[in-house]
Amino acid sequence: MIWDLVIQPFADFGFMRRALLGCVAISVGATPVGVFLMLRRMSLTGDAMAHAILPGAAVGYLISGLSLGAMTIGGLVAGMVVALLSGFVTRMTSLREDASLAAFYLISLALGVLIVSTRGSNVDLMHVLFGTVLALDDAALILLCSIASLSVLTLALFFRPLALECADPGFLRSVSRLSAVTHFTFLTLVVLNLVGGFHALGTLMAVGIMILPAAAARFWAVGIGGLIATAIAVAMFASLTGLLLSYHYSLPSGPAIILVAGIAYGLSLILGPVGGLAARAFPRRHFEA
Amino acid sequence: MTYAVAFKDLTLGYDRHPAVHHLETRIDEGSLTAIVGPNGAGKSTLLKGVTGALAPLEGRVSFGTLARADIAYLPQQSEIDRTFPLSVMDLVAMGLWRRTGAFGQLRRSDRRSVRDAIAAVGLDGFENRPIGSLSGGQMQRTLFARLLLQDARLVLLDEPFTAVDARTTADLIGVVRNWHGEGRTILAVLHDEDVVRSHFPTTLMLAREMVTHGPTAQVLTAENRFRARQMCEACAGPPHICGRSAA
Image (cartoon, rainbow over all chains, first blue to last red; front, side):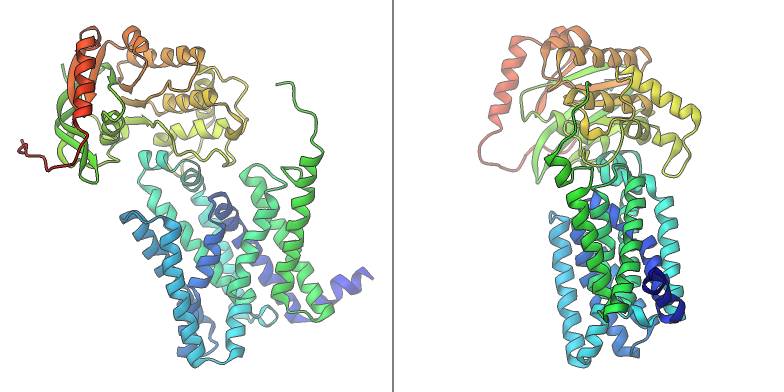
């Protein structure tokens, strides 16, 4: 019974094993980045960046069709241009980060939709928007795993300046020149993971696997380490369950995975011990001191 | 006596409006100096000018033998995000940045010095509390512990005792006096004249321009306070371009 439901699909079909590996890589790479996005109150920045990479992927598609390399490079370039321009405007003018990022990502998105609709067919647009997790080839898997590894290593290296940049940016600026470097390194990680994620889940759904597990983890853990571990566990559970649901009920897999993550978020919201609704409704007795 | 900081015809401001106007004076090395003056006198702005966060509109700030890394600064309203999951221990340990840098390891001896700093500001037992659970006074003690670890030769404090109770103020003044005893230079923006009179030997009175700078007893007079108030009120009104030539 359990075998049929959970193991059989992966044992029988190579594409399911590939999909699972791809999703595990995304879970390990993208969710820690999502935890920091959430802690920096930049959850919506992930969404904005996902829209920003669309024209790059579209240009890559126009030049060489459904090519992994061209669409990846295009997406990276578009994402980095938007990140750098909005960072530059934020640091050099009086415009705040949210406004400058919104301005550039909207321009980028409009450009992307224009390019896709003049040249591509609707099927291609669906591919870019929703990904093809059930058709990941070797190159795509290597790309996803490389991005996950790079992302984890970079976060480990930049953990201290990144935590300080989030918690007390003024102090970081006073003791070190790393503030800007840290910020852009982090944005690069966001873009990288979104570009990796869109091959599997599509540009829009890639943000979901980044942010939803992080938001769910907030109701279970307090420290950064606990948040990251919980978020990765939630993301992996969502990937596995989502893939199985899509297999058994013929659902599109990207949205299925994100919806399972959404259900995990909803349950955490209600049951989570750290400020969840149930914990608020039935508070435990306070301490002596 | 050598100086720690010298202000040379220094004008600092925002959007062409000067907050500190043609300031010319020196802060001696090892001095314990209070900066006083009415609201809007440019006290906080002056400290920002010393840290380098604000570039001068005119003139300059020069340091004797100090480097940027020798300066520690406690802002009036720190930008700390208190919802961020850090413990008191984590936050205080950031004071060791000069030694550990962004990537260096926190050694066992470092952990001991972090604990010692936390004990020195009277927060034993709070090491693992999240910073979000601290009261205003406890937060200020935590920030002082971080300053202790920064081991800076020049310490800038912007209204460190505002919104802090008498007991905490007394403890933190003890920390400041220790720094003074160790030969560090301290510049503190203060409003409580009793604190200034009893603990700060030197005072700089600002009212956008310098009113006077010298031994505290000679600075804190009714006459000087009156002058400072008049000078501040005189700055109101429509702006016109400063005609004073650059030195």
